[in-house]
Image 1 (cartoon, one colour):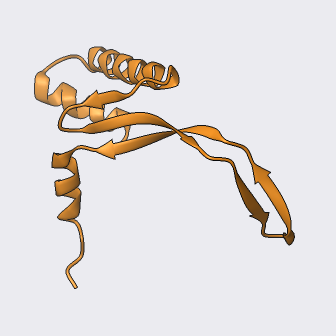
Image 2 (cartoon, rainbow, N blue to C red):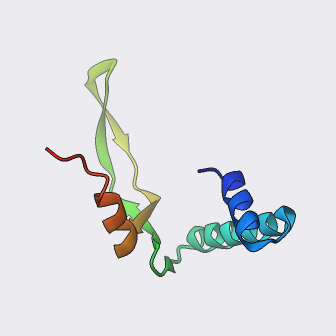
Length: 97
């Protein structure tokens, strides 16, 4: 699903103009991105949590020159932890053995 698909679907269900829905969706995403960029956790109940984690420094390997070690510095990454309802819904997609 793309942002466009989301806007069209919300507009169809609410009767709002697509341009207005796009503005609201875009502002929501902007505020989430801004908060995460500031190092804050963003918790959306029944959806999930966006949080910043710091990855430790580590040694990587160059596949073209396996004997060469490549130091990888620590860095901040965004992690998403799905909420209970989303996690349960996705588990239903698990193929049966």
